[in-house]
Length: 109
Length: 111
Image (cartoon, rainbow over all chains, first blue to last red; front, side, top):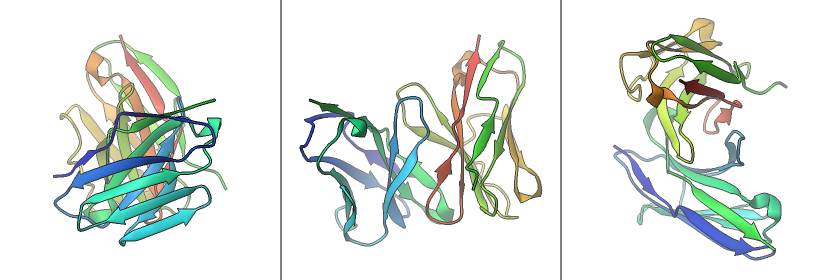
């Protein structure tokens, strides 16, 4: 089976940098994804790491270490609109995703 | 182009009734997924369709839940004899590969 752990809540101030960690235990692993979900909205794709290292997309970066079963999402230059829940998800066999329980990010002035 | 659509957006039903939830995926996406999300919780995998292969039903919580995908496109999730614990948002996603594109969900409330 698959299990993922991420912090339930993170608070940061506007303009700061925040890192959301995700550790996983899986029976099969093909990659780690990150999704953003605003209250009442649908999850939207942010990034996908299949290989070790850092992937950068604008203000967001995602990191993966397969040997440590660990990844993180890094958000820079935080904006109020970044307040949302962030989910890591492991891709197992057959394109199936197992999601973590989510981290609620609160951005304050 | 159009994204994933789901209907109805909200459904209120009485305990014991059957409900059908519909998902229209993005055209050309071969994979379709159903998830359930309870308030403040993560996404619980329910079922996965990939092309013409047999669906992965490993996440369905009981035999009251079933789903079908007709013609490799539209999918319907059916919940029979609904219970109060079935109340949640049911999300559908389609995918051409690694990225899943989610619909807006159906909020199901069982009274």
